[in-house]
Length: 380
Image (cartoon, rainbow, N blue to C red):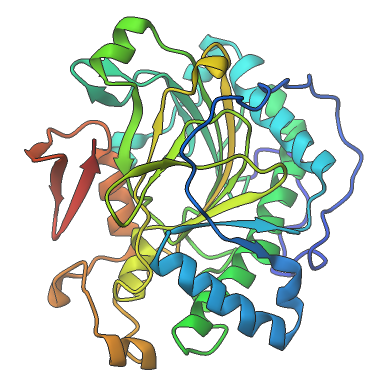
């Protein structure tokens, strides 16, 4: 059932690397924090100029850079992704709307069925996740399926759905698909290998996530050791995180140290998740990252986030692509037993339902939970 006025949901992508233009309704501006002046230990992450992906030679060069990033740092930046700074700012204004301009009573009508359906579509309220020592989270999420008509939305969001849909399509066709082609090339597979399993109109849960972190009490910061979201990997294949100025994201480096991810204006931070690690036979590792209390000059600000989470189609089994010449040379690391490999749907539902709710078993600095045939690890 369609709940809203909508644009055409065809399988055709928008114009390459150009954002859709349209008449837009007014939205109260979100004023972000100024960048921090604190000297932080930043991770040294590569920057990929996506405009170079237009040519064969450009893709060959970028594929080498992406392989290096995904097998070493785990994160990289994308620039020249097709949205101007003004268009990105507009999307951050929209990202703030579900939290500041929807009443608490109306939010209750649109809660996500996280535990019952294993789906984040809708609101995740604050204090849903347990962090540590009785401390619960202070992040509010609103997740919208790439098909924005999948479910009903709060009244004030409905006029914004054409823009959100255009944003989802732009991320899917103009950013995700080029990245997937580079990842396929890195495995010496046909360029369209991953693209074929990331269909915009297939059954699945690739989605736009809007989020907002709120400051916590000094007592909660002490009890949780300043950790806002424990170290974890993402569920899907590729995550596209639009950089914003509040420093809080950290990546666990290969030598076991947490390093900060630096804000770059109008850049996208990219990482791989469980799905990509599984499909690539461990060649592209799911990136371990966490969210912590911002530095002292940003601790009074809220932190609005804008993300596109990509997952393969629900019916795809998370089996390594063993036909890859690269995997045949370096070997395959399986995440699941060969005869018990879940589909993307089975894995996302299990992880979504359990996250922040399950009792974890401590193994040194790592906490583990078993989900069917897989193990999920959380990092302090």
